[in-house]
Length: 432
Image (cartoon, rainbow, N blue to C red; front, top):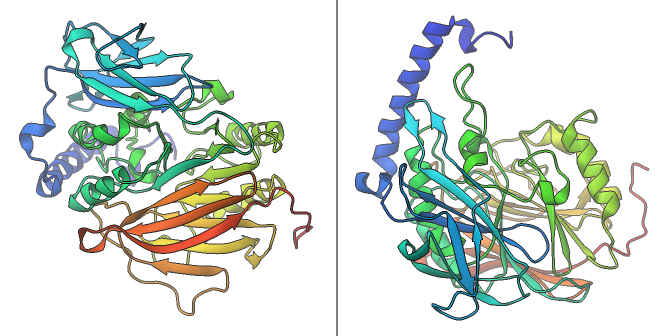
């Protein structure tokens, strides 16, 4: 029953079991969190800074300070180093409790309107903060080029560091993250160490994320799901008329991006389904000719791991996405790389969707090395190596996709393809 704890235990027994599991997870985390114990503690100065898109020409800046800090909750910014011509006060500052853990104070400030394709210098918390900088994305327009870095299942290992280093060598405008961020797995200080790990990249370009299974962290009777994820990573859901931080959309240059929640309800009676239907109906392909979606659990997967995990969502949403002429669906979850042909309902379809699994960011669980044999007709390229992807949209009709392998601590372009948008495709689906 939903009202009872897991395993049929009464509440006190369940609480004890959860505490044991939590502290066991903490011990296990100590074995693989190479960052060191001292880096699990919040520092006095602002930290874990990252930026996200917050509607047209606006950026949300998020940072954390130690509980009780008297530093001002504001962002100063301008287009020249150490010269701040504008400021914004945080519109929300809060902390959260999770079992025996209390977070630092999490601040969110939206700044703008900003100029397109411009570098801004900024500091958080007044004179107490370091100067950082970010570049805004290109302007909106059907022929405007844009580059996305794409990653999933990053975690915080030496391989994660390697992936981040290679991403920083890419001249990208926005990062798309297909879920499973910190791999904290209930041990909340690892959300803090993750925030520090990604800050050099996430404070310099907008990072747009969706949730994975490792980000849920719900405990019956004790902790609501997504408590850390929603508290730390505020996405532009209200700006895209979404009722939930778990699914939302945004426009960049010539691309409309839809971030979906694999672990939020997605059936026809769900909020996510209704919102997605409305969002896709509003897309104007004459303004944003490219349409890209991000999920966590892949819909097409020939790896031995996580077979079928995305099937329910695929059955519910694939017809809608195909009807809307979505170009690409990115996924994580499987710790390997795989690219499909255009496919729909399990069959090749020249007007179908290309699926790319990119769950090879560097997580602590290692690679998923076994693939199904023989390789399905729709599976074009697959390999179990850590890495990241880059999507370079050139114009309204063409884009370049490349996957960069981390092996031997050297970024290698292992797979690449030129993609033509299906915007003008008129072939009906095979099931219609």
